[in-house]
Image (cartoon, rainbow, N blue to C red; front, side, top):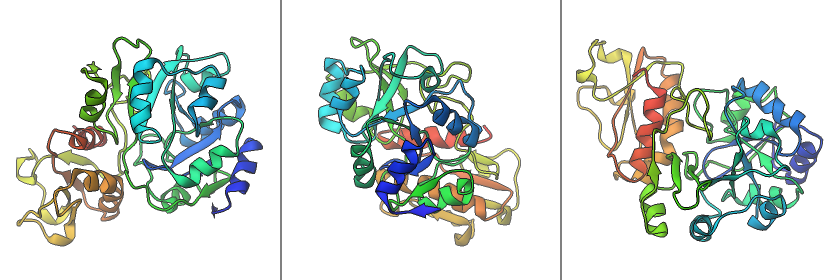
Length: 319
């Protein structure tokens, strides 16, 4: 059920129930972050591999500090500028954090989301919320309450209504386990360039894929996938040509003249990467609902949020 009562959501979470919550990035499937049984329900409902860790959410760094989770000096510099916001910090875990959260790692991901409804909810709680995206594992992340209700409504306590997510991509994740060499773990709703400008140096960037022992969410190679197969590029570049009526196309700012307009979804007519990112997951859902044989997604400019959009499209595609 979709609810607007923040206190009811808090009561459900206190009782060990799961509640989908709105954030600026995507809707999250939340549980009491100190209740191992409640957290186990997240993995069960999502059919999520238990080696894939979760993010803890709260409304203040003081609370995180009281739970033994400290941001080092360089992380605080970034947090002061971008939190609350679409940025997650990986730091050494404390004994307060259940191992099921971290999938056995000695570090944990933490963040403060920038959404008034969820910040109000978090202010009522004496525990953080563990919350991955509120969808079945590997499928398209939800950016509206109705997306969650349609897929998980009968399996969880409630969906807290918060409108459409205004960023639409999951948070960027940076590891500060080694404070002298912060490391990018996931591209997301805050551009790497902005983070590096604030730090005054470049982030370490290894492979962002790890299917066996991921340090943070969003590192699995196959993710965000619709039911319809997806490919990247232009229809004419694909090795196996399909009739144009069998294609759904996701485009940045311009229609392709050879494809019927009704088969195309434009993410930003003005060419705004922020707008494109905000609409991406809804566009993938809409393309999937066209029931075509293939979704063809344009490759975006490889800069700023374009990198994060391409990252999500690659993980959703067939290769």
